[in-house]
Image (cartoon, rainbow, N blue to C red):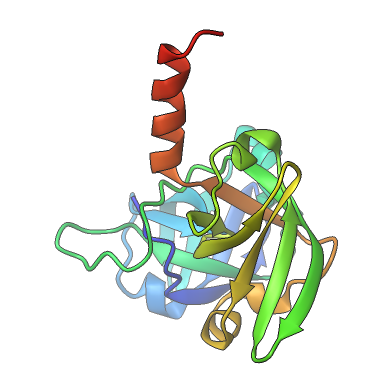
Length: 194
């Protein structure tokens, strides 16, 4: 379980399937077997070596996420798994990517940046105005939503410490819908006539 609060931007050293990421901060406390969210996708640490972490990204992961797009030098958002007793700062995030969205537009709003994403229908089905959504591993608040897209507003701090600071139209991002919304949807599907 994660919170969507990025603790470090790592740098890709080797792309998948054996993903190697330079991340001195996270690597300093990581151990083999730990779960780390990379761009919102939960992966298991298979090696820790001099400030770098290695992960195995299986074909299913590469098909369903943006991790297959990564190249050496790319920056990635990193978050270690939540530990019992840690402060809950974002929202409940599983690290299970529900779909890939695409940036359709960006626009400045003072110091903030408004960003709109096209998203798969199943992600949008549980996305609500002022609700939570995870974009590339970052917990964000939805500022607008319709049948095809949703929007968020990025504050300067988020833009500075995550990969979201470089978003531009056409960029693909991992999306995870709010887990509470998914549970409610599933419960209602079982109770409502079809």
